[in-house]
Length: 375
Image 1 (spheres, rainbow, N blue to C red):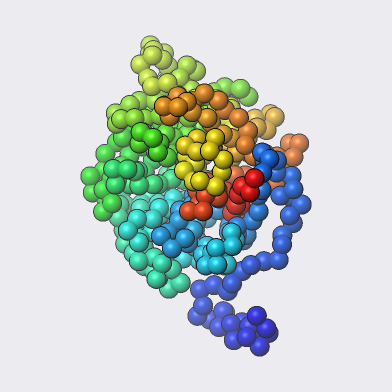
Image 2: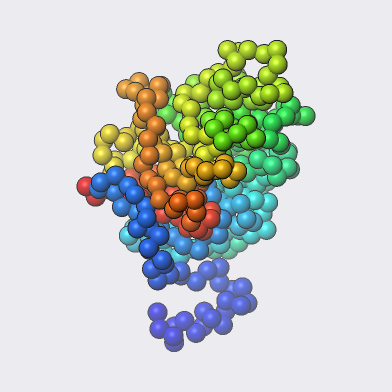
């Protein structure tokens, strides 16, 4: 674009008459990306930069990627020429209450703020027009502690919305805390699907048997190595996963476990690292990666915040058995965001694109990465 073509845009931008200016920034400090270690044949690149506090990711029917944040904005990242890099960063909405969660259904963008879920209809046609939201559900607790909502539509067509515990460890004052809930797409019929979940900010459904799997963050202040974070499997509603009485299946809470048995509660499918802050997990359902990765679970670990030796800041791979019901290994897939004890990025959530590549959001580095395989 020449200065002659850019000049009218520069005049209009201060007046708010354009929603975005194409942003394909010159290569940013790719020295950081060279620190990322991946298995042979995989590469990592920037899908988009300048995406402040990037969190959950969702993709529309036209391939546009939507990004929730822990800030007040929701972004859209179109890649019209399908070159593996967003053409621009479009601000869809502002002034929201930590709109962490995003999901797309029937052409509408659903956004989960701390206290409510809203919907932007016909989003592909309206994303540049600052569309007005339709309130879907507005009775969620408005507490910041574990208030970031990760949302997704399940195989049953219902919208799943977790409500984390408003504390490190406590007996919540309302039954909705420490749960995963589901509702109809129009906001009716809210019901608890799973209980005893301290704080999940990532879940997905098995492509083999449609069971819900989710990560859960363990409590703090029990030392560097207790408790582990959890990967859980919920094949049916009504299961209780232990919070606040037990963590990771067998780690008792020093205050609330008295008089209770760990066998009462559902054990994790896999114990993860302690305090790694396992977040937006995804089953790999694409075809670009080698067959050994299909139907396996990728887990971004946001990284520990109060462990004396930092842990996490990586993407882990959990391999399942042939049935897809048992976790048989837990191994590193991508690492390097932690250099020594200094993190330069924090992976948050994942998204499998239609071409089979894997997007990764990073709310510290304010970017979305793309991991691809060329073999």
